[in-house]
Length: 180
Image (cartoon, rainbow, N blue to C red; front, top):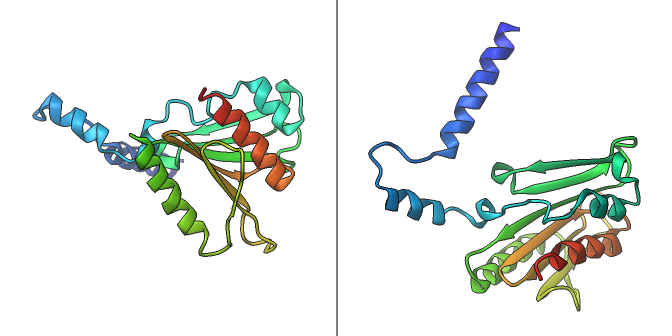
């Protein structure tokens, strides 16, 4: 038990050290500039894209009270995981959301991510979804199907959803629809 607490304390200490922060001798302007220079994923206010529990449950086709909604912050790519409490191994939805400083930055980030996925599976453009969207579907069970979608300076990576492309599209429409 003591050994577990020691490892937990070490882990928390490392996590806090990795987060950084302003030191006493750092100028406020420098702290603000370094915060702005962080990767885009650090700027997302709600990794679940503003989806209410009712909207998230509806995407899974489960009652709201059965929703297990897990939000992982910047250290985990601002991921949102949605699944059933009653059937944790049943259908689930996972996605991450990033807000870039400009539309040009979002386009570049989208293209970089699409290029990474294209090394394992060819992407297909998806019409009528945000400003830009690509589906990366695979017949290989080892390769995850993914949908990348961008609207303005925000882009979304839907990692898993029920009903493959149709389900991923419904998730992207719901999240991107919150952007106005």
